[in-house]
Image 1 (tube, rainbow, N blue to C red):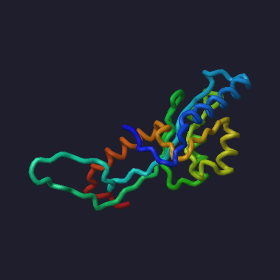
Image 2: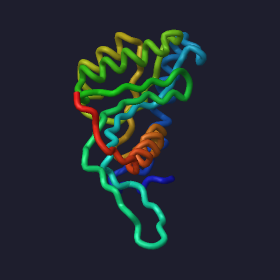
Image 3: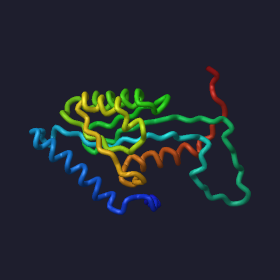
Image 4: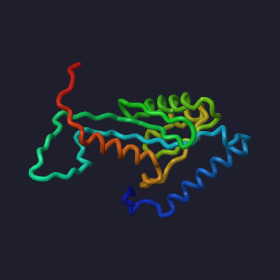
Length: 177
């Protein structure tokens, strides 16, 4: 499924991302790091909700509709590895400290590799000084997508499928804490 392109998206977004990635791999190669020592993956966050209406169904006759009255929301972050090991976690917030903890998880999941290349969006906490310093310390290379280019991040399609599946779930009641 294709994304509708925003008029604000740079026309050469794909070529620019390819150039940025090529620059990172050229620098790593100059440092003597071999391709098999590098993990590459995409990071993104989402907040699926059970009250979203992102799925349509067919019906013959008058349909019986059920609506969720209990709201549930989860803030999830994922690392979709094209090469290496995936990672998934649930965050209370999307602050720099939470992102740093997730970066440590990604590194732990891929500790057999020398370098991890992360491709992600320009969310403020992704660009924070604390996140960049931790990335340097852990041997992570950060590559930022161009604004308004979610179609260049394949994990967006995974989140889309999860959100669609959750939107039709009916929560009858929640256990009391």
